[in-house]
Image 1 (cartoon, rainbow, N blue to C red):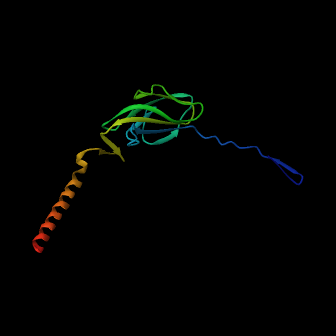
Image 2 (image 1 turned 90 degrees about the horizontal axis):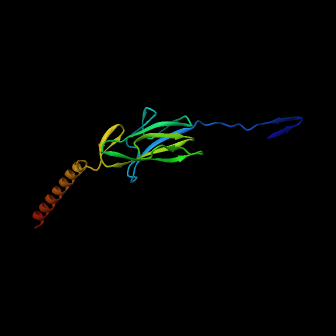
Length: 157
């Protein structure tokens, strides 16, 4: 663009701001019932999910999915990638490599219904013991309701 002000001419060149390529890591249950359980090891560093960080393009990076207890690995998916497209060496192998040619979101898909990791704590999922306190409370409410009905019948009848 050239601006002319009086006798001065000024030329501006467009400025290009380069962004570092990133890898985003996530995981998802194959049914979509839960997300980001387990961890992913990328080039020897284990990451809590989800996460994103700068990564070197044009290279193979070692990846491995570490499922939460009670879950197992199904496959890798490239969820989003730029051009040229990144790819996973063996999408069905728990430990393999990803070749990054552009910023990419990589997803580990898992299955199972064991224990999940929430905030670093193991939490039971789909276990009857989780419902025990609620069932006990429901039993107390039913007992008091029955007592109230019986008492009302005795006092009015």
